[in-house]
Length: 204
Image (cartoon, rainbow, N blue to C red):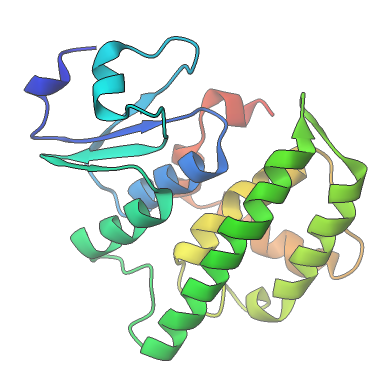
């Protein structure tokens, strides 16, 4: 890798190959067609130069000139403001607040539950029932197009990594199956989603 000191004019993203937070961040970058250098991090071999940027090995990490961001929520909202087209949050303040509540729920409950249940390529059986209940909660909000909207947004970007992993791992959903599968397919068929996948994620 060329010295990062010589590349601060470009946006750099350092992300993990199989990480929910990293995946949604890459998806936002691809959806907005942001010109960014994406670097996949091997946690067993992190260079001193990367450690100088992310001393606590906290990924994803985004570098935009002299700005360094490590929290995926902060990163995706920053990118949505820095590159406003297409917008991934609603303009209406009430709808925007509802989106942020949904993002909080995904980040603080759904993602941790998945990470705790996903071990050695297998999902814990208890989690399978839990994630089914999570997906059923959003059925009324995704039945027409995307989450609470005709347009693709940050909540969709955040749900996408979970939907992909649970489908690849063989999660069977019977109740409202078509609505959830159709919603998932709308996301998976987007060019941005396909471009966001690492080799590890494609091979799950």
